[in-house]
Image (cartoon, rainbow, N blue to C red):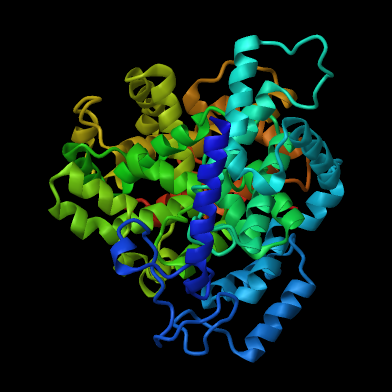
Length: 576
């Protein structure tokens, strides 16, 4: 059986070698597919105005892909040479260059700087070359070469089956350098190597370049599985590592993969062994889509298309399935700059561009292929990238959606009712401002009181936004006051708003007398100045602004147009 498999592999490799002699590649290294094969390989090669074929490493002077002038290229080189990841100026400048378009020969350097690969490698105790020596020892015991992993899939499968049947090695055999888990890992990665960009020059066929490219990809993935066993290897990593290898060296690609998968800013919330994290993020995006595009989301649900059907492939492969590779690289530039929020932004942009077509389709068999195979007229650089920069996704939105998903997963339908109960006391005291926030978005108090089932996603987001932004600051304020005064019982309302009673006025005056030259509460004043709102001195209660971020700033701007204008109180500072 093994002989038959090896003969079939040899025959297949010779056929591929003969076919690869007459292949043409585009400027990014992808083979030009024939018209009859374009349905199987969804890849566009129309990057330049001319019709001539270019070497995959060259770049056309008449390319549609944006090119920087020599002066801009020099400025970018100087910026990368003196890069400081902690500098806001450096990050703002690199964002400006990303908007203009990064030259292909400088993209690897830019990714290296943004991901802080050098500092990560210097601060880690992991030795990449030493890990490869251990992996090679395991492969030698298995009789498999790193340069022939694809042809050794049958051998790995047979060895795995024998170990599963016997459960232990014979006593006369020396102890091997591998385990059953290692064989399973080797076999899974070898299978995914066949699916990772099979039309790219560095991974297709049996040419020396392709064999070396497959070996590099295999080594990077194995090393990361050894580096972080808790995450290990899962589907989609092979695509990410392959893109990194197209732009960086082998060891640089390994550390770039480590930075992407381990740092919370990037993909740490997407990858794990059980794919639980990516399923959670798909639910978060589903809530986000309901918030941004309620009609489209309702239409897709009525058709029978769920977000998990198309969002999970997008997230796991970071949109490498898009047909236009220049757009893919621009998306990656933005993801490496901004992190996970850029992943949500890209998905939302694609759906917004496809919205007119999706609303006209009423069949699941037509909607799902449109999302999985994005048309070229939508994915091309001149359409997708400008729309991507015009789309804004705020961090507080994603945090609110994440809170919604967590509440629903922990408490089910009762979660929404609990959130509403938490928000009720503050809504009663805020009075007019709560009406401003809700009515300005087209909501009315009658809609909020119509029941849990009729509550819109926007209303839920606003409740969670208030709870998320106001709750932590109020808790910190209570802890500060409890350390100075006698502890007393607080209700949820007192965390944000305090009634002007005679007792509290006495405490305020005594504090001003005990601490001359100091404001009543530096934390309170700082938050108030950041939000841009004044404090009102009312007989009923004082209006203290504790929220920060978009929700608080919007509420503050809108409160200026209300009937009662806020009044700044100068008595908070002691008079000298």
